[in-house]
Length: 327
Image 1 (cartoon, rainbow, N blue to C red):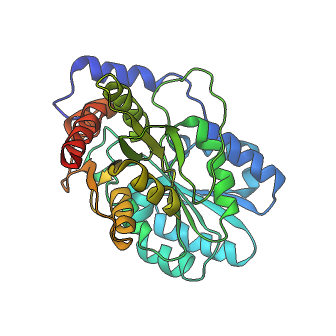
Image 2: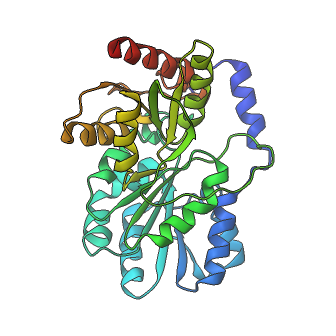
């Protein structure tokens, strides 16, 4: 554990570890598997953290714990997919992307098989430091042909991740984050492939965001509204394919864009948005909020989001800077 953590933060994390947390994704995967006998689950020895304990207990004959061997898991999944099954493969984001790129490309993406890759602990959201932090995974997976990428902003969207994965005819990467506390009752919400969701309307600037940064962006928009700045906030849960139409409409509507993501600023959501804007020849004020091309450290999520400039204060500051350039 990083020495910069306070004793209170450490105690809070330990206490949370013993509280029951919702398993919306795990429940949804079991429900889908009961309806579709082709669905199987594989896990790389991280069963409870990936919510696959539910699948293991309910459908043990279709559950495979392969051990700490993500590359073998993807190879197995490719073979299963060729035999007519739909494998959902589970591990931490850092392990199931960076360690396994060759197997993903050659045994899942190149043959365009329905291998569903499910990673947990996105970005810097882990106490375990650089070895477990996935700040390059979106850039890696976004560059793989046939691959779709979806990232929910909260547990209310976890169940729909299973549906999106099944709806995509080919390999999928789900970038998941389990809640750290037991949330209040939430209503499951739906998402669409290739569509962003306008979570807040505004005409001065557009904040395009995903995952953990969605809530922070909404907080930033509330802060900015008190200053007379109205921000459109878009939850871009479908990172690939991305909602080009909504991005271009927002660029024309507000003339200024900020992107915010729990990822390196290179190659992720911000890069995807910038590519669309540049290729359309649009000139506007633009800024990316994310990890500034550096390695991070272990710590609580709130501590790391603040230290590395991903929280609502950092997003609000970036938005003010963009509006200053906009004039």
